[in-house]
Length: 219
Image (cartoon, rainbow, N blue to C red; front, side, top):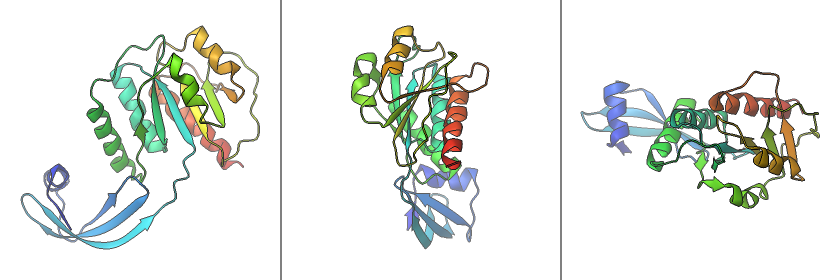
């Protein structure tokens, strides 16, 4: 097989790939193909397939993410891809400060983060969600996990890896009282407060997702 697009130029000019080196190809659906470089020209690279493996998609955490500032939102996406979030729903909350204008830029960020983390699964960025749309999203999940700064009692049941979880993280201005009240009233709501100071959105994605994964691993 041969590669002759922008990715080939990146490998040739930036990575300075050489004949005999091994490259991993990811299809975004769990398949990883290892291939050996057999020829490098100025504009293309030829490969020979070594092997192909496939992983089952067992991701069970999705993310409802408040539209924060562009830089913060984009870094949150990178973190989410590396962690293994399956679907991201951009949330147009009361205090959101930014609108998505270039979806192709976000898709490029997802692809770059997949390559960086060697993640064989693509993270899907769904259409923006408004407050009035929330019912259509939360009904898909067994549990909705709300990140909050309020003093709350731990209301966690025994977590189940077979269930689907939606992690809710507000924008940098936080969720409004009405929005938090909506999530607290859900029958499948779980409130999550970890012992940290106020986290920026990218750090909240990493810390809170890691907390859930730690709970799963403890089962």
